[in-house]
Amino acid sequence: MGILFDYFTAPDDAGAASVLEHGPLGPGAEPVFPTVSTKGIDPTVGLGTAAALLTGRTFDEILADTAKSGPIADDGDGSIFVVEVDAVVSDAIADADETRLREVAVPWAQSEEFDGRADPADLAEFLIAIRSIALTARSDQAGLYCWICI
Image (cartoon, rainbow, N blue to C red; front, side, top):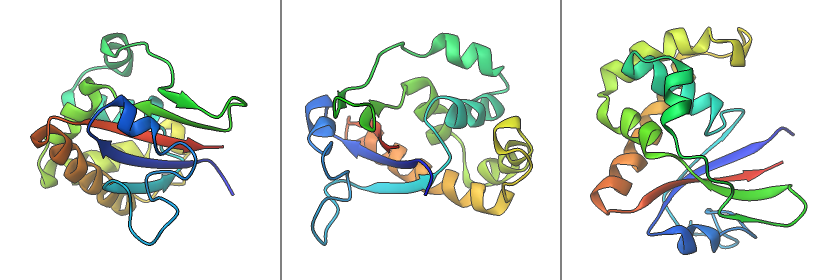
């Protein structure tokens, strides 16, 4: 099945933590928050690598500039948790235009984390979708979060 990553906006940490049980797509027909779902693209290494490519910085520089906070919420056994996507990463994605996101998807697909199995077109569409909710988070003065289910 793989690890599920649902990226979403929420007004604050408490709002983000409120989706722990069912995820941001919620138990009902309507999502609780705007959400982009994926498998295999985590908020630290996956999005951090994309942010490095977008900014021209190294991954280590991006990682050094991110806050070192733990999960905002977890289920107690480490199988479901919510984390905030660091502003360094979300800003790098939000600041890029669609053309730049499509360009970066090519080298990102070749990165070690994907082991040559990623389609640049799929990654570009993912980045464009994440950019949309990152811009929403910015305009709403909200946060960008990730619900992770292992």
